[in-house]
Length: 272
Image 1: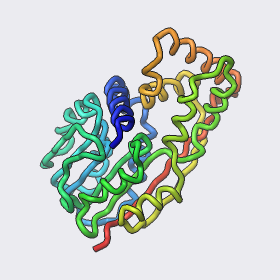
Image 2: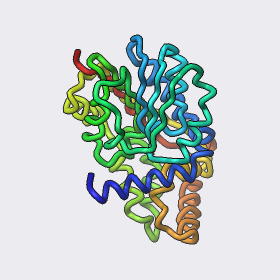
Image 3: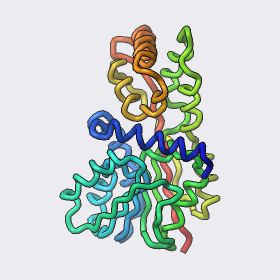
Image 4: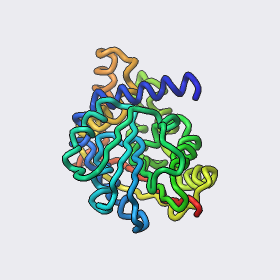
């Protein structure tokens, strides 16, 4: 991993730690997506789960609801704050050995072929080396094991990007560039999985049109992407936020600010 990637990872971890206690309430749509991902996994007798970018642990809870036979869970995340929330969920996982690790996807310390199922829900879009991350997540899978990934897909939040593009003076260019860094399409995900030695079972995109208040949209951005603006002073951030809100209000209709959100799903298995 390069120094730049380490710095990026550190920033993501610190950003999510600062908003960890708000995550579950603000990002409820992400848990709808996690349920959709978990429902799409093949029905097999999984006993050992690895949750990469596990965050607050809600996706693990959803996995246990469908697969109560799981007896060991390894949760890996870069955010200490999110992991603290996950530890508080121990009571929701009765009879499960919970191994929570602060770590990066590229250095998880999980033994090869030691788990039956790997999930990563709304985390992969922040991984600097996405092909490398897919390969690292595949390594701990036992032969015949299954991987499920949910991340943000291309074309999402285009309406917000258009508001930012219209600002004068403009927003920092890295704000818009973050979307190109994060968002991926079906064919890219297929390449990642094949290169990782996995057999894709299904890869698909789901497109949603949502309406919300500009304030609620900006709160979502604060919780999931606070690290992108961490270099700004409070005054600079307040100024940009005010102007972006004004731009969103200008294009909002009777139902609020209309935006597109695309979720990219992938399910694959390791050859026997």
